[in-house]
Image (tube, rainbow, N blue to C red; front, side, top):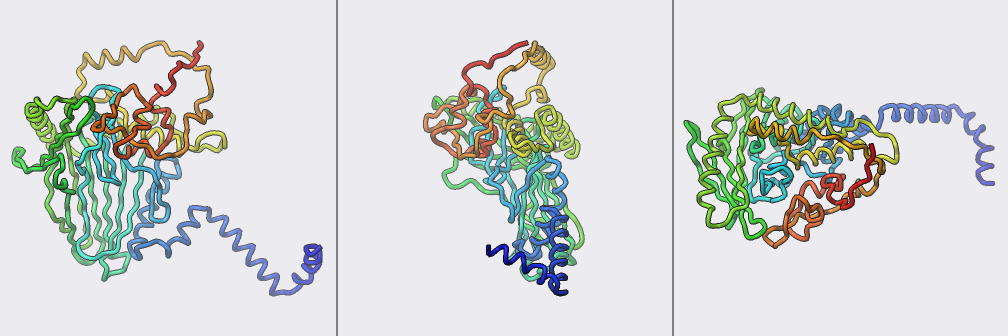
Length: 447
């Protein structure tokens, strides 16, 4: 009754010229607001809310570079305004770099079927920071199609709050797809201001009592950093880890209105699970092998290394179940599918891409893959709810505590009772698809 009386009074209200103008203005605003779309609305109204002042405004321009990739389903990003709980990692099945926690994970064996489930105490990421007091904003992106993590920081001196004085530090982290021992950190610094800037370069040194140690060594006419350590695994055995990387200066000077680019190459060699009596001999072999491989890489073109990685990764990614846009409410979103595929590839070896593979081994692998396939007549994979569980915290097994890590035991990998957080299991994307051995009974086949 109340609503009916109000509706009867509506024609009289609209007879007023100011009320008509107000209504028309409101309608135009709603049409304009809707036309902008959700993403543009965010950019329009979040500029003043972005933390970091001038640095935040600079970060908005950097994020805009990624938007077309994200809109096509080729990546996801995390910003101060839209933070994701997703781990930002790059891996190739032999090693895995967790960018957020700055940890290196390694596999306990070079045999196919192994995965990088052992966390080391080595910090693989080199820190680059603007000297002095500064305002800073940062964002990260997982680039599905290129197998890389992009990280951008915009920093401005505290005394200069202008976008044109904002220094941009772009980093790209790559675990090389066809060179299992290699990872690369690419650095690009842009200084558009009228004054030179200095940046500190530092690595996280192992804590006192750490199982890792670092020393300086010579490689031809270059100085390199050699880090070595051990990871306890099952049966009281030890996996030795040796990392060699190019030494950087402790400070970077970037002139006014100029740019700076550098590439930090690192090589990681690991042993098979070894008895404590053979550690010295094994370490010597790893040390010489890692130094030799780094020497070869330093003589090669970094751009060619990156192109080689991107091509190998893209060939693997597009041969999977990559999705662009999914509108079916009963099907996992393209973001879920593509993120799952990214983590699967990051934690899986690709033996046929390994450059160390001999022609005989390659022929044997190719022949083993050439078998008659069968038609699967069970449920539709994309609609199987048990294959796409909700995100949940998972733990890695801790070999030191007696929890075994077996390539045939998916439950141990997914639900280990101890140890540190596994970056790939924390994501919780399609975990059951990673290790089909969860399904003890073979699926029915026909054809």
